[in-house]
Image 1 (cartoon, rainbow, N blue to C red):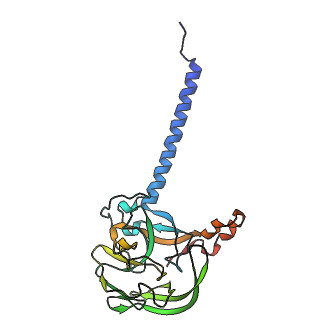
Image 2: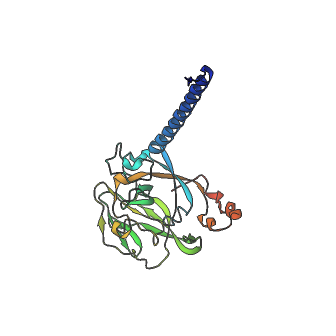
Image 3: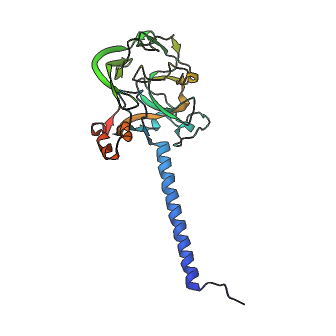
Length: 262
């Protein structure tokens, strides 16, 4: 009859190896949990895939959004999955002019970025391309000609303006066309617990002027807020991915690294 019992030193080695693996896995799980907790509670990076927020944000910008200013809900979970909407804990509304990231109402697994221009109870209307809030026009001042980047990396001339919201919050916008499709709208009242958001690239943004059914945001539920954009951490021209890898380094935009977002 054969003896299948391992020698004592081999059994001891196997136990030590198993314990070492278990310890490593436990440490990795702990690190992952800490990172996810920080991303869920404090701040999280996001990337800008479109030009809807130009000239404030560029395609390829890496953003840092803080989560604590508006409280927490299912939208705060740092996963690209569609969780059911929940009420917010420690909730607070943004200020007009805040740049925010949020779960798109049409598919909550997607995170979008826009600027808040209307709060609950505000009456919002576009007249000939100018924003009116509660019947008062947001001031516009011409600021020359900028360059709007298209999805394929080309630059097109874009008239640039400085828009000033109530409370004297100012930011730049692009106006690509004199008669844009959403330059004139009916007056809309923002419902309770909702927000009106717009892109700074006014003729290239599917925002609260556009119903969700048509690919826009519609009135944004405050529960969908993820956080407030604080800074651009870094930036790389995504169009460079279509060029030889040897030229990719030239796509970096050092001037945008670690810059605040107004």
